[in-house]
Length: 542
Image (cartoon, rainbow, N blue to C red; front, side):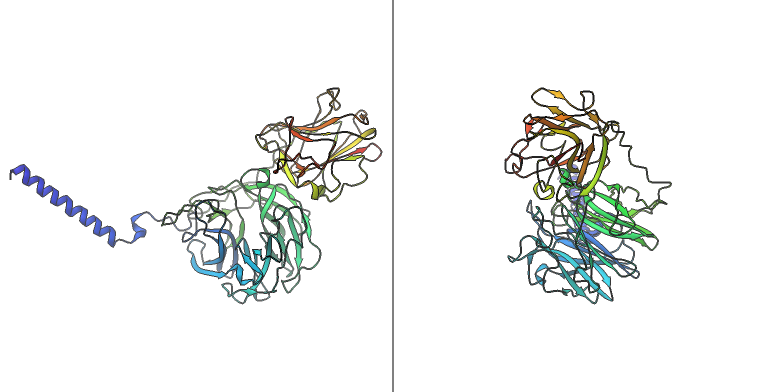
């Protein structure tokens, strides 16, 4: 063997020894050290399985997190068979306690461990949970379970659902989900829930029955996932928003002096989250001197390779700050989460953008009635008689491929001296310097604009929940709509803008006109013609 050949053998033997040593070292080394472990408190904060819909509970010096367990594979829909519990003394290191309950522990339920929350009252712990009811009731329902310990075991507290579709008649078949319960300082308990309508009811002291009527609370852009909380005498409703405006969910919030309101919309708390079209809030206030926002994203990949997605979510946490007036500072979603020290912002939360000014020839009345069952007064013409039931679908400038003109044609059966127009509308981000809005009323046959100086009227719009948006023409030169002529009522804005949403029907409920987007007929999900919900009033009836 030549010297160079011997050198090569020795080098090869040395490299083989190094490789073997490295392999043995890797086998002996804990898996946690082979890849850098995230800092405690980094997001996601729960990493053993995919978890969603976090609901925190503080008991003494311990925080509990109750979550759903996402088990869907591939692109399957949500597969959730149990609720899990975790506990922590510092919110950074969590102990997994496994399943505390399954949907089928409710004998009347068929499955689906959707969003749940646990609250403490009278020495007991009550779990309010979303489940799929069995065939005796359609759709999702809300059940109540009780335990003597925050970790269970939880048992059905009623033997029947607390809330079903029969409890909340509506055009939406999925409305009874996502319960949140808040126990006030005086012991009064409140239950809120719903998608896309937010319902609120008081609970009896036994925590298993409603105490009084169910109210519908109309909040701008509300979708689902409400969270009721209270801090320094102010009540907060934090909720998932914007999904019914055709975008991924954001978080928004409102404040009130009472659980019954009146609620003041405060704006967005955070935008859409990573890799998940849903987001779900939980608030921890003043735990060991600091407040927190808990939510979920789709950013976790498990060791076996199952990646996060909209149906495989993971619980995350950020610091939450309030200004001196009690407004929440907008939250930036991070990977570091609460692993880094908090840095409270200084000053006041910025005020919402100025919506601008409406034309002086029209008076705007917003939110005269949330989720209107009927039109107030006696309209001279209306496209629907029951707005809430007949026009459930929000349609805006970003609908379909986008449009800059949302219009509805109509034909009066008698002359109308126009006094007021009311629309069933709401939501969106409102107007500002970059997103204006104009109200138009055209004589279709003559091709002429009847409002303003032939160019329509500028409209300033503040975000509102689903309700009435009305325009009073008492200061406008007289407009008379003639019997038998065809007119087009329209809102003009910017294509893809999230300014405002009109409520449209499922199917053709007004045969003498049609809704359109940029002159293309509006169709419902079944391809049938649709109509916007509107009403016209005479000057005398306005």
